[in-house]
Length: 148
Image (tube, rainbow, N blue to C red):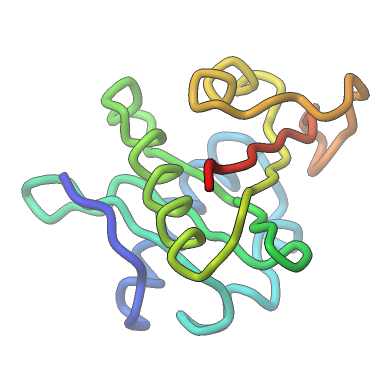
């Protein structure tokens, strides 16, 4: 399997399919909350797509600048039948590498509470014990600084 930055409208549609399956259908997030101005084109954000060995899109994610030097990782989704295969890790690590190459020094993300332990394994720290709701789902803010 590979993970690559999205450069075409077709790849973006594939990523939107994955996110639609995971967030809209499985987790009941309203489409109005899922889709935003960062989804209008491959250039609107740094979008990524995980593709299985047979060419099937199985994961998607994106990141954008949060503040100077800090990337915000978002919309990390893996299709249910493919979970447990380190695809989420591949998406996060590929986004981190892309942000590093652009000169970013760290990242933040808003993790669903059910995924907090997953992000801890990837070196993210919970920045505040306060839980907040996003799209009706409990989340915590997490962050990670990269080694120089």
